[in-house]
Each structure stands twice: as structure tokens, then as C-alpha cells.
Length: 467
Image (cartoon, rainbow, N blue to C red; front, top):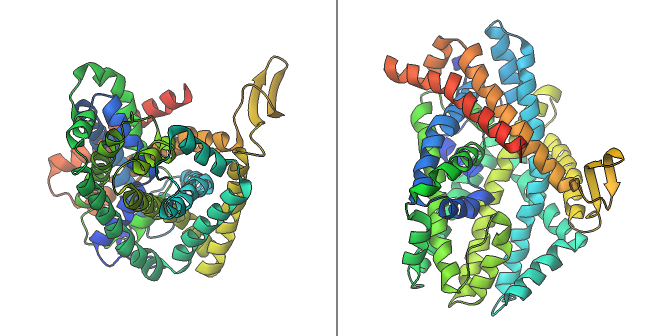
């Protein structure tokens, strides 16, 4: 039976290792700043309720779909979907969805490595005391100085890609599992240290109110944002969760495990907000919008509060760890596939793919400086231009890759995985993997995977394209 297969790449020691891995994949840069900010902007407690509702209806069902496909196939996402499709009497071309997800993951990793590298630079800066007493203009200039220096960005991009490849090259047990057993507890400890410090700022209540005040008038405005973030935050749509599911123990409950991951992901995001916003308010600053301001607003805050240098250092180490745990999940699907396809060693495949991501990532490095005026997909009065230098419209190389992956490839991947698990796999196969004894609960789970989650993804897809 398909469920009796064993992955050639190895297996997690327990379901808790899968939880650490999947949570590590889900918790990234967006959790540390974007989710807390969105919570404050879109009605506080009202947004949290909407977000949890959307997680249950969209995020968790797609994660269920990816995990059960992965564990059923016990191979890389591409080969798992191909073999399971043939087994179900469907077209083997369903594997193209996983191939698309794999390409998306590599493209995301190419620019994620660059942005994550900024946190490494800020760790050094915080450690040296560069931000002590810094002004708003000074913080903006420091960030501008970093992004305008291609050699500096290349250094940190290279280092981050190297440490990501190092973990993957060592394998599932010696690399991924051993690293995650250290990274994830460290992430939680660092977050709790920051939370404890936020209690001492005298502004914890202000930060708490910013996050959790219940403003029902903003519910309508926040529904689409909650649905979109519920989809993107769990790292679904690229095959990372699917390949992690391939290493999941057979006896582990997929339903309970995935629910735990969803709750932990949300808990980390909320805790980050409770830890960071009191610090921002203590420095007399207004919380800005988006994860990019992590590198401007917070350095000002840490530079102007008691023990700010130490807390800032802890924060950027936290950011680096969160980014690292996410980045390894982006590389693993492609490494698993090419090891299976070529028979080459994991180290060789990892080196080749990491180099490819590094090269593509150099386009992102240059997008902030030497190629800042290079605009792609420009619609001008004289027609369409794939590339035009100094155009008013269009997107930089970085913006183009970000748009392609987040607004097109990820939603299409999530939609395909849900449809495959819900409509291509047999009910018996899905029931066996989910191990849900209650007919009512099983039918509910299948309905969410088959109908509700795809509709939610389509809404997100259309909304993202219209922006």
C-alpha cells in the first residue's frame, strides 16, 4: 500500500519533529512584523478572530492536503504527485503543479536570502552599538547605506545561502532534524525574553491595546487581508509542507499535528506583537506598516530605550533564526526531487541548487542599487516593454520575482494541491492518511479540502492580481 512506503531521504523521529519543521517553515519574517501590524490596523481582536477563522477554512485544509499527499507518496512533491496520480488512474501531469511549486520555492529563496541577510548585518550593527541613540534620519540612512551597497548585500546573501545549504546537505536526520531541534526552541526562548522585557517598558498595556482592541467597524476591511495572510503564512503552495509530510511517521495524526502547527504559527506572531509594540511605544514611535520597516522603526526603538542594545541584538538573532528555518524548507523539495531524478549525492545537488538560487538572488541584490532603474514589464504609450531602463512604471527585478511567486505561483500551487487531495485521491486513501474515525468529521475535512479552501484561494488569487 502507498501508506507503507518509506522515503529514501529519511524520516522524522516523531510527530513533534514534524511540528517543529512545519512551524519553522511557517514562521518567517512576516510573522515577526507583518502579522502583528495587520492585527493592529484591521481591528485588533476582530482581525485575530477573522484570521483564525480563515486559518481553519483555508490554511489548515491546504496544509492537510499537502501533508497527506506527502506522507502517502513518500517522495519529493513532484514524484509523489506523479505516482499517486497514476495509482488513482489520473493524469501524471498533475505533477506539474508540484514542479511549479518547486520552482516558486527556489525563486522565493533567491530573494528571501537577500532580505534575511539584512538581519545578519543588523546583528553585527546592534552588537557594535551602531544604533545607540540613533535618530529617525540616522536609522533611515543606515538602512539606505546597507541596501545601496551591492558588495555588502552580496556578502550577507552569500553567507545566508551557505548556512541554508549546509543544513540541507547533511540530510533529513543529521541536517534538518538536528538543526530544527536547536533552532525552534531557540526561537521560542528569544521571543519569550523579548516578551519579558516588554513588560518592563511601562507600555505593555498600550501595545496590548494596539493588538487586541476589538473594532467591529474594521471587520469588513480586514476579511480579505486575513484570508490572504492565512494562506501565505503557513508556507503552503510550494511543496515544503508536502516534502516534510513525506518524512512524517506513519502513526502520527495528520489532523492534530497540522492544527498544532497552525496554532503555534499564530501564537508566535501574536507573541511577537506583544513583545515588540511596547518597545516601539516606549521609544515614542508610531508603529509603521509592513515588514520592511523592521529595519528602520525597531532600530530607532532599540537605540533609545534601556538595555536596547542587548534586546536589539536578541531581536535580530530571532529574525535570523526564523528566516533560516523557513529558508531550509524552500530548498528541500527541489533537493529531494533532483536526488531522486539524478541519483547524485545530496551534497552535490544541494550545492548546485544553492548556487542557482544565489545567482538569481544577485538580481535582487542589484535591484536595490545598480539595477534600481531597470524596470520589467513596462506598459508605456509606445507599447509593452519587457525591460526598460528608467521607466516610470514597471517593476524591479525583485518586485517582478515577488509578484510572480506570491500572487500567481503560490495561489495556483495551493489550489492544485487541494484539488488533487480532494478530487484525485480516493476517499479511502484520504481517510487512511487522516485517520479520522468520525464520519462527520471526515466529511467536514474533505468538504473543506474539496470546496471551501479552493474557493478561498481563488478569492485570494483574484484579489492579489487586482492590486
